[in-house]
Image (cartoon, rainbow, N blue to C red; front, side):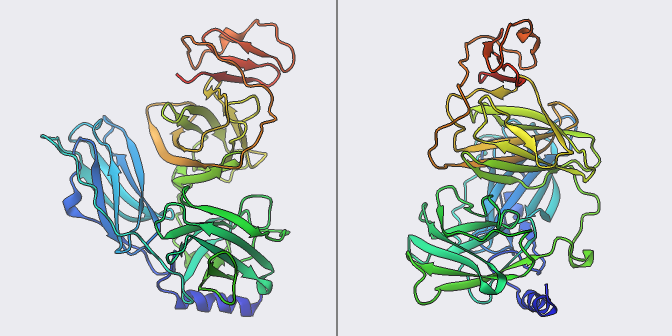
Length: 453
């Protein structure tokens, strides 16, 4: 980047104090004392206030500090117009007097943290869920969203009473441009556009919406880039209606910072914490989701995707082969539950091993819904949950799978770890066999599927 461009980015950063996204100003949050303590009951609501821009998404996390009653729960909370937020938890299975740490996070950074204790419930302890004003952040010429190369920026777009709008980012001066039509599907007056800087200029999905009810259609394809999107200031414009018209109805700036910027400009965690890199991951049906796990000093980690409620599950152990302390797990939503490899790793040196018999067989493609992500330290699922997250699979285009026949499952008791029941079956290449207990083996592929237990 030229000296002039760097100076421009520096000027914009220094001038921006309040915008529609993260800024250099220190963000903070407080938890309302009258929303605590939480009781051992359903519908326990944590409320608070934050300086984070309305429309942004916080993560409220409860992590047990009592070894006799381990648990880890977290919920997303959208910041309301007045800066308030609320997160609802079901604590009915947590015994009284259990101690825990309450943490409020934004964009991976801790805003506030405190130690608390669960109290006994005497009667009806369910909290009322507060009605919070709908956030309507309106971008302006002074608004800026800051993001680091390789990360995903969230840009809230106020729809100003219209159902559709055109979102345009970039231009000739930065050799990058992409346009998309936005639709406010849930009628809340805001569409939050997710801009994936890692996918910009590649075959991957660059633009998406944070809310599954909203939709986005690319109307001007982005150019192919030879490398990662350059650090620079990218102007974005919003045009209400179906076209770009004579002039933008609202404008703002996306500031892409270099991922090798000097440490003194940022709060750097010198000892990265074992866990998921983000609390929420998103993908559309038929696409491949990228789930990054921070192993820190652990030799291995086990990831569980889904569970009984979602109708799908798979468990796998990942190992860091290139020594960078992370593994990016590739989850192929089109292959999930069928006779193709569902999981892989972005780096060839890293590895992933699916637990035999852990993947649930599907008759159709993976449903568009939210899937729990559970992380365990070491190889194998245990009672000690290290971190949790969510994979949100959004509805995609209709498609016909070319992955071959789907196995037919017979009912019967199944031990998810029982792989010996498949031995001794004479199988030819590509054939499908039913083993004892309803497990399914795909010969030649080493894949074992099971019915939902």
